[in-house]
Image (cartoon, rainbow, N blue to C red; front, side):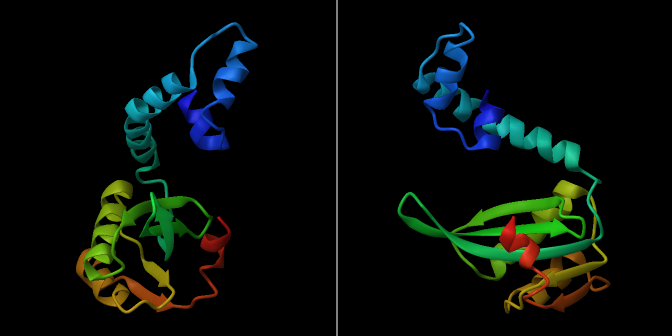
Length: 151
């Protein structure tokens, strides 16, 4: 049920209504509790399954997002085929956040990419060299990352 809510953008009240028709009765608060308990485990399982299954050409971008009234940044990467590499939330858009993102992406996938395409943010070149290695080709092109912006 939690996976349905996360995947299909259902409201907390949608799931109890859908399952009431099938004879299962629970409240929207139960859904909230299940989500709090199960989401970390689901995320970890999805990361485990994804390990080693992404390509070696990554497209990286970050966007700002308001969460609970505070602005934060979401770093995302996809591979050439559009498969998700990794996602990281950060309060800052700086070198430390870029390094943390690449470190996480490498750990999660178990892969060091051959090429990383970014939009040209100043912190990316050094973060890529530091976390992924000097052999990784870095190119900047804001238009090649359009696949990320549509995802």
